[in-house]
Length: 458
Image 1 (tube, rainbow, N blue to C red):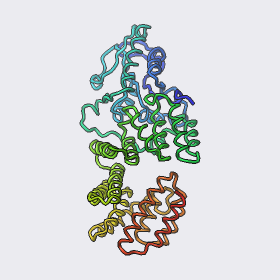
Image 2 (cartoon, rainbow, N blue to C red):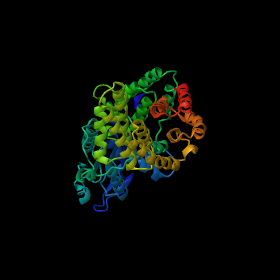
Image 3 (cartoon, rainbow, N blue to C red):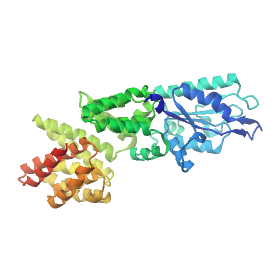
Image 4 (cartoon, one colour):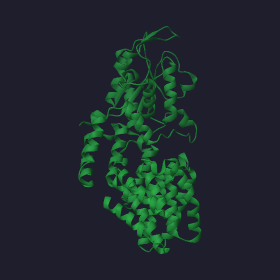
Protein backbone atom coordinates (compact mmCIF):
# COMPACT_ATOMS: atom_id res chain seq x y z
CA UNK A 1 0.00 0.00 0.00
CA UNK A 2 1.29 3.49 -0.84
CA UNK A 3 0.61 6.66 1.08
CA UNK A 4 -0.14 8.29 -2.28
CA UNK A 5 -3.49 6.50 -2.22
CA UNK A 6 -4.57 8.51 0.83
CA UNK A 7 -3.42 12.06 0.17
CA UNK A 8 -5.35 14.85 1.83
CA UNK A 9 -8.12 16.12 -0.42
CA UNK A 10 -8.20 19.69 -1.68
CA UNK A 11 -11.74 20.37 -2.85
CA UNK A 12 -12.07 22.99 -5.60
CA UNK A 13 -15.20 25.15 -5.71
CA UNK A 14 -15.34 26.94 -9.07
CA UNK A 15 -17.45 27.36 -12.21
CA UNK A 16 -17.16 24.55 -14.79
CA UNK A 17 -16.59 24.82 -18.52
CA UNK A 18 -16.85 28.13 -20.42
CA UNK A 19 -18.71 30.94 -18.69
CA UNK A 20 -19.27 34.58 -19.68
CA UNK A 21 -18.51 37.43 -17.30
CA UNK A 22 -21.67 39.56 -17.46
CA UNK A 23 -19.84 42.77 -16.53
CA UNK A 24 -17.32 42.62 -19.38
CA UNK A 25 -18.81 40.11 -21.82
CA UNK A 26 -15.58 38.11 -21.66
CA UNK A 27 -15.81 34.34 -22.08
CA UNK A 28 -13.59 32.41 -19.64
CA UNK A 29 -12.64 28.76 -19.96
CA UNK A 30 -12.51 27.65 -16.28
CA UNK A 31 -11.65 24.07 -17.19
CA UNK A 32 -8.37 25.30 -18.69
CA UNK A 33 -7.61 27.41 -15.60
CA UNK A 34 -8.16 24.31 -13.51
CA UNK A 35 -6.00 22.08 -15.70
CA UNK A 36 -3.16 24.57 -16.30
CA UNK A 37 -2.78 26.08 -12.81
CA UNK A 38 -5.10 24.96 -10.01
CA UNK A 39 -4.80 21.20 -10.38
CA UNK A 40 -0.99 21.11 -10.82
CA UNK A 41 -0.52 23.51 -7.87
CA UNK A 42 -2.51 21.21 -5.61
CA UNK A 43 -0.70 18.10 -6.86
CA UNK A 44 2.75 19.64 -6.47
CA UNK A 45 1.83 20.62 -2.92
CA UNK A 46 1.29 16.90 -2.26
CA UNK A 47 -2.52 16.88 -2.14
CA UNK A 48 -5.29 15.28 -4.19
CA UNK A 49 -7.35 17.83 -6.18
CA UNK A 50 -11.07 17.24 -6.55
CA UNK A 51 -13.73 19.34 -8.28
CA UNK A 52 -17.40 18.75 -7.66
CA UNK A 53 -17.90 17.54 -11.25
CA UNK A 54 -15.20 14.90 -10.72
CA UNK A 55 -17.04 13.26 -7.81
CA UNK A 56 -17.74 9.64 -8.66
CA UNK A 57 -20.11 8.76 -5.82
CA UNK A 58 -23.80 8.25 -6.45
CA UNK A 59 -26.73 9.72 -4.57
CA UNK A 60 -27.81 13.31 -4.05
CA UNK A 61 -25.10 15.71 -5.25
CA UNK A 62 -25.78 18.19 -2.42
CA UNK A 63 -25.00 15.54 0.19
CA UNK A 64 -21.59 14.96 -1.36
CA UNK A 65 -20.96 18.70 -1.72
CA UNK A 66 -21.77 19.39 1.93
CA UNK A 67 -19.57 16.48 3.00
CA UNK A 68 -16.64 17.82 0.99
CA UNK A 69 -17.00 21.34 2.36
CA UNK A 70 -17.30 20.07 5.93
CA UNK A 71 -14.62 17.42 5.81
CA UNK A 72 -12.06 18.19 3.09
CA UNK A 73 -8.77 19.16 4.66
CA UNK A 74 -8.25 22.00 2.17
CA UNK A 75 -10.47 24.02 -0.18
CA UNK A 76 -9.68 26.34 -3.11
CA UNK A 77 -12.52 28.63 -4.20
CA UNK A 78 -12.46 30.63 -7.48
CA UNK A 79 -14.54 33.78 -6.93
CA UNK A 80 -14.04 35.26 -10.39
CA UNK A 81 -17.64 35.58 -11.59
CA UNK A 82 -19.23 36.06 -8.17
CA UNK A 83 -20.90 32.75 -8.98
CA UNK A 84 -23.71 32.24 -6.42
CA UNK A 85 -22.94 28.52 -6.04
CA UNK A 86 -19.27 29.16 -5.33
CA UNK A 87 -20.05 31.96 -2.87
CA UNK A 88 -22.59 29.77 -1.10
CA UNK A 89 -20.00 27.01 -0.80
CA UNK A 90 -17.37 29.48 0.45
CA UNK A 91 -19.84 30.73 3.07
CA UNK A 92 -20.44 27.19 4.32
CA UNK A 93 -16.71 26.55 4.46
CA UNK A 94 -15.95 29.78 6.32
CA UNK A 95 -18.65 28.96 8.89
CA UNK A 96 -17.12 25.58 9.77
CA UNK A 97 -13.35 25.87 9.16
CA UNK A 98 -11.15 28.62 10.61
CA UNK A 99 -8.29 27.87 8.20
CA UNK A 100 -7.07 25.86 5.14
CA UNK A 101 -9.34 27.68 2.65
CA UNK A 102 -7.67 29.58 -0.23
CA UNK A 103 -9.79 31.96 -2.37
CA UNK A 104 -8.55 32.94 -5.85
CA UNK A 105 -10.00 35.27 -8.52
CA UNK A 106 -9.27 36.66 -11.96
CA UNK A 107 -8.39 40.37 -11.81
CA UNK A 108 -10.96 41.42 -14.38
CA UNK A 109 -12.86 43.47 -11.77
CA UNK A 110 -12.70 43.93 -7.97
CA UNK A 111 -14.10 41.37 -5.58
CA UNK A 112 -17.45 42.19 -3.90
CA UNK A 113 -17.11 44.25 -0.71
CA UNK A 114 -18.04 41.42 1.68
CA UNK A 115 -15.12 39.24 0.53
CA UNK A 116 -12.65 41.98 -0.37
CA UNK A 117 -11.14 41.69 3.12
CA UNK A 118 -10.21 38.03 2.53
CA UNK A 119 -6.60 37.30 1.66
CA UNK A 120 -7.10 36.04 -1.88
CA UNK A 121 -4.79 35.24 -4.79
CA UNK A 122 -5.45 37.28 -7.93
CA UNK A 123 -4.50 36.06 -11.40
CA UNK A 124 -4.37 37.77 -14.78
CA UNK A 125 -6.44 36.97 -17.86
CA UNK A 126 -6.00 38.46 -21.32
CA UNK A 127 -9.26 38.46 -23.27
CA UNK A 128 -10.44 35.68 -20.97
CA UNK A 129 -7.39 33.52 -21.62
CA UNK A 130 -4.88 32.40 -18.99
CA UNK A 131 -1.45 32.79 -20.60
CA UNK A 132 1.39 30.36 -19.92
CA UNK A 133 3.14 32.96 -17.77
CA UNK A 134 -0.04 33.78 -15.82
CA UNK A 135 -0.70 30.05 -15.31
CA UNK A 136 2.80 29.57 -13.86
CA UNK A 137 2.36 32.56 -11.55
CA UNK A 138 -1.01 31.34 -10.31
CA UNK A 139 0.31 27.82 -9.82
CA UNK A 140 3.33 29.08 -7.88
CA UNK A 141 1.34 31.40 -5.59
CA UNK A 142 -1.38 28.85 -4.96
CA UNK A 143 1.14 26.12 -4.18
CA UNK A 144 2.88 28.40 -1.65
CA UNK A 145 -0.38 29.18 0.14
CA UNK A 146 -1.36 25.51 0.29
CA UNK A 147 2.07 24.50 1.60
CA UNK A 148 1.81 27.18 4.29
CA UNK A 149 -1.53 25.72 5.34
CA UNK A 150 -0.07 22.19 5.37
CA UNK A 151 3.08 22.95 7.32
CA UNK A 152 1.64 25.51 9.70
CA UNK A 153 1.52 27.29 11.97
CA UNK A 154 -2.21 27.54 11.52
CA UNK A 155 -3.58 30.95 10.59
CA UNK A 156 -7.26 31.88 10.37
CA UNK A 157 -8.45 32.61 6.84
CA UNK A 158 -12.16 32.68 7.65
CA UNK A 159 -13.36 36.24 8.40
CA UNK A 160 -15.89 34.86 10.88
CA UNK A 161 -13.19 33.25 13.00
CA UNK A 162 -10.80 36.15 12.44
CA UNK A 163 -13.15 39.01 13.31
CA UNK A 164 -15.55 37.47 15.84
CA UNK A 165 -13.91 36.42 19.13
CA UNK A 166 -14.70 32.82 20.09
CA UNK A 167 -16.87 32.23 17.03
CA UNK A 168 -18.39 28.77 17.65
CA UNK A 169 -17.25 26.28 15.04
CA UNK A 170 -19.58 23.43 14.18
CA UNK A 171 -18.56 20.39 16.22
CA UNK A 172 -19.42 17.30 14.21
CA UNK A 173 -19.26 14.11 16.30
CA UNK A 174 -16.86 11.51 14.95
CA UNK A 175 -19.80 9.18 14.24
CA UNK A 176 -21.36 11.81 11.94
CA UNK A 177 -18.13 12.46 10.06
CA UNK A 178 -17.69 8.71 9.61
CA UNK A 179 -21.21 8.44 8.15
CA UNK A 180 -20.46 11.26 5.71
CA UNK A 181 -17.16 9.72 4.69
CA UNK A 182 -18.78 6.39 3.92
CA UNK A 183 -20.64 8.18 1.11
CA UNK A 184 -17.75 10.15 -0.33
CA UNK A 185 -14.42 8.42 0.33
CA UNK A 186 -12.69 5.48 -1.22
CA UNK A 187 -10.67 4.04 1.64
CA UNK A 188 -12.11 0.52 1.76
CA UNK A 189 -8.67 -1.02 1.26
CA UNK A 190 -7.28 0.96 4.20
CA UNK A 191 -10.10 -0.13 6.52
CA UNK A 192 -9.60 -3.74 5.50
CA UNK A 193 -5.92 -3.49 6.36
CA UNK A 194 -6.71 -1.94 9.74
CA UNK A 195 -9.21 -4.71 10.48
CA UNK A 196 -6.65 -7.33 9.52
CA UNK A 197 -4.05 -5.76 11.83
CA UNK A 198 -6.49 -5.78 14.74
CA UNK A 199 -7.11 -9.51 14.28
CA UNK A 200 -3.52 -10.38 15.29
CA UNK A 201 -3.26 -12.64 18.38
CA UNK A 202 -1.90 -10.04 20.83
CA UNK A 203 -2.02 -6.29 21.31
CA UNK A 204 1.73 -6.14 20.78
CA UNK A 205 1.43 -7.82 17.36
CA UNK A 206 -1.53 -5.62 16.50
CA UNK A 207 0.48 -2.53 17.36
CA UNK A 208 3.39 -3.65 15.15
CA UNK A 209 1.00 -4.20 12.23
CA UNK A 210 -0.55 -0.76 12.75
CA UNK A 211 2.90 0.85 12.83
CA UNK A 212 3.65 -0.75 9.46
CA UNK A 213 0.49 0.83 8.09
CA UNK A 214 1.52 4.21 9.51
CA UNK A 215 4.98 3.95 7.93
CA UNK A 216 3.40 3.18 4.55
CA UNK A 217 1.41 6.42 4.73
CA UNK A 218 4.61 8.47 4.48
CA UNK A 219 4.21 12.17 5.25
CA UNK A 220 1.30 12.42 7.68
CA UNK A 221 0.80 16.13 6.98
CA UNK A 222 -0.33 15.28 3.46
CA UNK A 223 -2.56 12.36 4.46
CA UNK A 224 -6.36 12.45 4.60
CA UNK A 225 -7.71 13.44 8.01
CA UNK A 226 -10.18 10.54 7.94
CA UNK A 227 -7.32 8.07 7.47
CA UNK A 228 -5.35 9.59 10.36
CA UNK A 229 -8.39 9.52 12.67
CA UNK A 230 -9.06 5.87 11.90
CA UNK A 231 -5.43 5.02 12.59
CA UNK A 232 -5.56 6.96 15.88
CA UNK A 233 -8.65 5.04 17.00
CA UNK A 234 -7.05 1.75 15.94
CA UNK A 235 -4.10 2.43 18.24
CA UNK A 236 -6.65 3.17 20.97
CA UNK A 237 -8.42 -0.13 20.34
CA UNK A 238 -5.20 -2.11 20.95
CA UNK A 239 -4.26 0.03 23.98
CA UNK A 240 -1.11 1.35 22.28
CA UNK A 241 -1.20 4.56 24.27
CA UNK A 242 2.38 5.57 23.47
CA UNK A 243 1.87 5.20 19.72
CA UNK A 244 -1.52 6.87 19.85
CA UNK A 245 0.00 9.85 21.66
CA UNK A 246 2.93 10.04 19.23
CA UNK A 247 0.52 9.98 16.30
CA UNK A 248 -1.55 12.85 17.70
CA UNK A 249 1.61 14.89 18.20
CA UNK A 250 2.57 14.28 14.55
CA UNK A 251 -0.78 15.47 13.17
CA UNK A 252 -0.85 18.64 11.04
CA UNK A 253 -1.89 21.77 12.92
CA UNK A 254 -5.43 21.91 11.53
CA UNK A 255 -6.11 18.40 12.81
CA UNK A 256 -4.44 18.97 16.18
CA UNK A 257 -6.95 21.77 16.68
CA UNK A 258 -9.92 19.45 16.12
CA UNK A 259 -11.95 19.06 19.33
CA UNK A 260 -12.32 15.28 18.94
CA UNK A 261 -8.56 14.89 18.40
CA UNK A 262 -7.76 16.99 21.46
CA UNK A 263 -10.12 14.91 23.59
CA UNK A 264 -8.62 11.63 22.37
CA UNK A 265 -5.10 13.00 22.70
CA UNK A 266 -5.80 13.83 26.35
CA UNK A 267 -7.35 10.37 26.78
CA UNK A 268 -4.18 8.68 25.49
CA UNK A 269 -1.87 10.92 27.54
CA UNK A 270 -3.71 9.95 30.70
CA UNK A 271 -3.52 6.26 29.86
CA UNK A 272 0.18 6.46 28.94
CA UNK A 273 0.94 8.49 32.08
CA UNK A 274 4.57 9.39 31.54
CA UNK A 275 5.93 12.32 33.60
CA UNK A 276 4.04 15.45 32.58
CA UNK A 277 1.42 13.57 30.53
CA UNK A 278 -1.50 14.26 32.83
CA UNK A 279 -0.65 17.93 33.15
CA UNK A 280 -0.60 18.19 29.36
CA UNK A 281 -3.90 16.29 29.14
CA UNK A 282 -5.53 18.66 31.62
CA UNK A 283 -4.20 21.62 29.62
CA UNK A 284 -5.65 20.25 26.36
CA UNK A 285 -9.07 19.71 27.91
CA UNK A 286 -9.05 23.09 29.66
CA UNK A 287 -8.35 24.82 26.34
CA UNK A 288 -11.22 22.92 24.70
CA UNK A 289 -13.62 24.15 27.39
CA UNK A 290 -12.33 27.72 27.10
CA UNK A 291 -13.11 27.65 23.40
CA UNK A 292 -16.32 25.62 23.33
CA UNK A 293 -17.66 25.60 26.88
CA UNK A 294 -18.22 22.58 29.15
CA UNK A 295 -19.53 19.34 27.66
CA UNK A 296 -19.95 15.78 28.97
CA UNK A 297 -17.19 14.23 26.82
CA UNK A 298 -14.47 16.73 27.75
CA UNK A 299 -15.42 16.76 31.43
CA UNK A 300 -15.81 12.98 31.40
CA UNK A 301 -12.19 12.55 30.27
CA UNK A 302 -11.03 15.20 32.75
CA UNK A 303 -12.95 13.42 35.50
CA UNK A 304 -11.18 10.17 34.56
CA UNK A 305 -7.79 11.87 34.92
CA UNK A 306 -8.62 12.99 38.47
CA UNK A 307 -10.09 9.54 39.17
CA UNK A 308 -6.82 7.86 38.16
CA UNK A 309 -4.87 10.35 40.27
CA UNK A 310 -7.10 9.39 43.20
CA UNK A 311 -6.52 5.68 42.72
CA UNK A 312 -2.75 6.08 42.58
CA UNK A 313 -2.69 8.38 45.60
CA UNK A 314 -4.90 5.99 47.56
CA UNK A 315 -2.60 3.03 46.77
CA UNK A 316 0.37 5.03 48.06
CA UNK A 317 -1.55 6.15 51.16
CA UNK A 318 -1.05 9.76 50.10
CA UNK A 319 -2.83 12.58 51.87
CA UNK A 320 -3.86 14.09 48.51
CA UNK A 321 -6.12 11.13 47.69
CA UNK A 322 -9.25 12.72 49.14
CA UNK A 323 -8.61 15.97 47.28
CA UNK A 324 -8.25 14.08 43.98
CA UNK A 325 -11.44 12.12 44.75
CA UNK A 326 -13.42 15.30 45.43
CA UNK A 327 -12.07 16.91 42.26
CA UNK A 328 -13.05 13.89 40.20
CA UNK A 329 -16.56 13.84 41.66
CA UNK A 330 -17.13 17.55 41.07
CA UNK A 331 -15.82 17.25 37.49
CA UNK A 332 -18.07 14.31 36.67
CA UNK A 333 -21.08 16.06 38.23
CA UNK A 334 -20.33 19.19 36.21
CA UNK A 335 -20.10 17.03 33.08
CA UNK A 336 -23.47 15.44 33.77
CA UNK A 337 -25.09 18.80 34.56
CA UNK A 338 -23.74 20.28 31.30
CA UNK A 339 -26.03 17.86 29.42
CA UNK A 340 -28.11 15.47 31.58
CA UNK A 341 -28.93 13.43 28.47
CA UNK A 342 -25.37 12.05 28.59
CA UNK A 343 -25.22 9.50 31.38
CA UNK A 344 -21.45 8.77 31.21
CA UNK A 345 -20.24 11.43 33.67
CA UNK A 346 -23.26 10.74 35.88
CA UNK A 347 -22.62 7.03 36.43
CA UNK A 348 -18.98 7.72 37.24
CA UNK A 349 -19.99 10.41 39.73
CA UNK A 350 -22.34 7.95 41.48
CA UNK A 351 -19.63 5.28 41.76
CA UNK A 352 -17.15 7.74 43.25
CA UNK A 353 -19.72 9.17 45.65
CA UNK A 354 -20.35 5.64 46.93
CA UNK A 355 -16.57 5.18 47.14
CA UNK A 356 -16.34 8.32 49.30
CA UNK A 357 -19.05 6.82 51.46
CA UNK A 358 -19.94 9.58 53.92
CA UNK A 359 -23.57 10.47 54.61
CA UNK A 360 -23.62 13.50 52.32
CA UNK A 361 -21.92 11.65 49.45
CA UNK A 362 -24.31 8.69 49.66
CA UNK A 363 -27.29 11.06 49.68
CA UNK A 364 -25.98 12.78 46.56
CA UNK A 365 -25.47 9.39 44.86
CA UNK A 366 -29.06 8.46 45.71
CA UNK A 367 -30.28 11.71 44.13
CA UNK A 368 -28.25 11.22 40.96
CA UNK A 369 -29.19 7.57 40.36
CA UNK A 370 -32.74 8.12 38.98
CA UNK A 371 -31.50 10.94 36.72
CA UNK A 372 -28.79 8.74 35.24
CA UNK A 373 -31.25 5.84 34.93
CA UNK A 374 -33.61 8.08 32.98
CA UNK A 375 -30.78 9.26 30.70
CA UNK A 376 -29.68 5.75 29.80
CA UNK A 377 -33.29 4.57 29.44
CA UNK A 378 -33.77 7.23 26.75
CA UNK A 379 -30.93 5.57 24.85
CA UNK A 380 -32.65 2.19 24.99
CA UNK A 381 -31.44 0.92 28.35
CA UNK A 382 -31.16 -2.84 28.49
CA UNK A 383 -32.61 -3.06 24.97
CA UNK A 384 -29.75 -1.04 23.47
CA UNK A 385 -27.00 -2.56 21.35
CA UNK A 386 -24.43 0.00 22.47
CA UNK A 387 -21.78 -1.26 24.91
CA UNK A 388 -21.70 1.85 27.11
CA UNK A 389 -25.50 1.97 27.38
CA UNK A 390 -25.56 -1.63 28.53
CA UNK A 391 -22.55 -1.27 30.84
CA UNK A 392 -24.23 1.69 32.53
CA UNK A 393 -27.42 -0.32 33.03
CA UNK A 394 -25.33 -3.10 34.58
CA UNK A 395 -23.52 -0.69 36.91
CA UNK A 396 -26.83 0.89 38.00
CA UNK A 397 -28.26 -2.58 38.70
CA UNK A 398 -25.19 -3.45 40.81
CA UNK A 399 -25.44 -0.16 42.69
CA UNK A 400 -29.12 -0.78 43.51
CA UNK A 401 -28.47 -4.51 44.22
CA UNK A 402 -30.96 -5.53 41.53
CA UNK A 403 -29.12 -8.78 40.84
CA UNK A 404 -31.82 -10.34 38.66
CA UNK A 405 -31.62 -7.46 36.18
CA UNK A 406 -27.81 -7.37 36.46
CA UNK A 407 -27.48 -11.05 35.58
CA UNK A 408 -29.91 -10.65 32.68
CA UNK A 409 -28.01 -7.79 31.06
CA UNK A 410 -24.49 -9.15 31.78
CA UNK A 411 -24.22 -11.48 28.73
CA UNK A 412 -25.18 -8.66 26.40
CA UNK A 413 -22.61 -6.34 27.98
CA UNK A 414 -19.83 -8.87 27.48
CA UNK A 415 -20.94 -9.61 23.93
CA UNK A 416 -21.05 -5.96 22.80
CA UNK A 417 -17.56 -5.03 24.01
CA UNK A 418 -15.50 -4.39 20.87
CA UNK A 419 -12.23 -3.56 22.65
CA UNK A 420 -10.66 -4.94 25.81
CA UNK A 421 -10.11 -1.52 27.40
CA UNK A 422 -13.89 -1.08 27.49
CA UNK A 423 -14.29 -4.18 29.64
CA UNK A 424 -11.41 -3.04 31.85
CA UNK A 425 -13.06 0.33 32.45
CA UNK A 426 -16.34 -1.26 33.54
CA UNK A 427 -14.55 -3.94 35.57
CA UNK A 428 -12.53 -1.26 37.41
CA UNK A 429 -15.74 0.56 38.33
CA UNK A 430 -17.29 -2.66 39.63
CA UNK A 431 -14.18 -3.43 41.69
CA UNK A 432 -14.28 0.05 43.18
CA UNK A 433 -17.96 -0.49 44.02
CA UNK A 434 -17.08 -3.85 45.61
CA UNK A 435 -14.44 -2.33 47.91
CA UNK A 436 -16.81 0.45 48.92
CA UNK A 437 -19.58 -2.05 49.69
CA UNK A 438 -17.21 -4.17 51.77
CA UNK A 439 -16.32 -1.11 53.86
CA UNK A 440 -20.02 -0.34 54.26
CA UNK A 441 -20.81 -3.89 55.41
CA UNK A 442 -22.76 -5.05 52.32
CA UNK A 443 -22.87 -8.59 50.98
CA UNK A 444 -20.75 -8.58 47.81
CA UNK A 445 -21.16 -12.24 46.73
CA UNK A 446 -23.31 -11.48 43.64
CA UNK A 447 -21.13 -8.54 42.67
CA UNK A 448 -18.02 -10.71 42.88
CA UNK A 449 -19.60 -13.27 40.56
CA UNK A 450 -20.23 -10.58 37.96
CA UNK A 451 -16.65 -9.28 38.27
CA UNK A 452 -15.34 -12.83 37.68
CA UNK A 453 -17.25 -12.96 34.38
CA UNK A 454 -15.44 -9.80 33.27
CA UNK A 455 -12.09 -11.28 34.28
CA UNK A 456 -12.72 -14.26 32.00
CA UNK A 457 -13.16 -11.94 29.01
CA UNK A 458 -10.28 -9.53 29.60
